[in-house]
Each structure stands twice: as C-alpha cells, then as structure tokens.
Length: 320
Image (cartoon, rainbow, N blue to C red; front, side):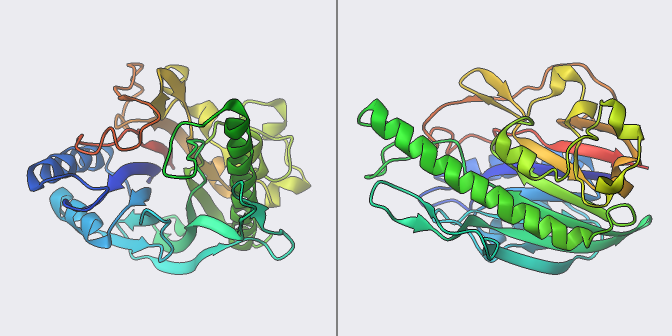
C-alpha cells in the first residue's frame, strides 16, 4: 500500500479571485496534477488546499479510474480545505476545527481578536485495506507566511513583523495540540494494534516545536537506538517518517531558495514497523537520488496563480 500527502496549491476552478484566470490555465494545472497522481499511484492520499469540491472532482476525472473522496466542511477564509482520496471507500470519523476543551483561545492580531479553533478543519476517515482498517487524519496547520492588516504581506516595521510572527506561532501550536487530541481519539490508547496515520502540511519542519507536539511520548524516534526497544509509550506514539526519506530528497517545498520538509506522514506503532520505504515526489517504486524539481516560492501567494501543478511535492510511504 502507498500512503501519502500532497498540498495541491489552490485547487480552484477558473474565474474566481484565487483560481486560474482562464480555462486553459486551469486545464494545464489539472493535467500536471493528474500526471503526478497517476505516477504516484497512491492507495490513500491526504490532500490540502482544495478550494472547491468540484475542482477535486475535475482532478479525479482527469486522473481516471475509481476514486473515493472526502472533504472537510470547514474551509478557511480563502475557501481552501483538506481532504482524502482513496481507492477504497471512506467513512468520515470526524471533521472538526475545535481546540481541546482546556485550551483557551489564542491572540490572532494586534486588535486583540482571538482564534478559538483551527483555521482549517481537521478531517479523520477510516478505510478498509487488504491489511485491515486504516484510520487517517489530515490537516493543514497555520502557515508561517505572515499577513498583516489591510491584506499586506510586508510589515510596517520589525516590531509588527515580530508580533505577527508570534501570533502565527500561537495559532500553529494550538492547532498542533488540537490535531494531537484527534490523533489520540484515533489511536484509542492502542497504537500497537491500530493502523493510524496523521498526514498533512504542518507548515514547519521535523524538529519544530509544533511538529514535535504531534509525536507524543519522546525517546523512540526512527534512527535512534530506542526505536527497536518496546516501551509503554508505543501505544500513544506517532513516528515521523522523515528519517526514511533519502537525504537528497528530504524536502517538499523550496521557500526563497531554501529546501524545507513541511509536509509530513506520521504513523502509529503498528504501521511504522511495516514501512518499507519513504520518499518525496513521484518515484515511489525506485530509490532515485535525483533532486526534486520544484519552483522556489516567495512572499506573494498570488504569484503562481496561473502556474500549472503545485509548489509542494507529495510525501509518501510504502507499507508492507
């Protein structure tokens, strides 16, 4: 089974404020996205930045074959949301943007306004694979890209930049905490016996504090001596598969020329010990050491409005 995640980058039909300007640009985008999905050939794929359900349906029609899809009913202010596509039927277990009960709202801007839930909903589904039931949660956490009052992407001064950087971090940390609570529900205290994965664009790298929140009990990461030693934490842990990705390809986006792995696949104990390989891009059947061909993105999210494909690479794992 191949399990993965991919940010589709503003998948809208043409004509709206965020989608391609015309049909030709839209069809070019669909063609490139469909070619990647076809080459990757996933069994289950978490997706982010789906702007319209109809656009995802257009993409799956372009790919061809039988697909099942589920989308969150909680898009952000731009209308983008997360979802799952699968070769097997999907049952929605949860679709929520709520923070855990004891986590208070966090400050969101200079006015003192607060955020009382995630900007984009978390979607949890279950599907039955040949290896048994698989539970998957998909998320798209708050971006590190900062926006300021008046739809600005550049601050008036460094004080404003620092404050809004803090507000974004508050929100991403709260969202990671909420996602971890959802993962706890899916694990149900028994990750040794349940196949559970958390997929998504976490908008930060492996060692970031917000990413680390999701892992649960520390001390047994891939690549450490503790990995092969069972302990009580295994029932609650999630393992980030990043160490299994060849170093030359351990990135999913290029930001101002810097390579970043901000898209992640996290797996339960039962799954992590059945992983046979992991990677980025579409060479799921090989151990290619070639560099990924990704555009370098900057501060203006509208700069690629009419560009085909996505500015992210898929991240995937193969499971025995």
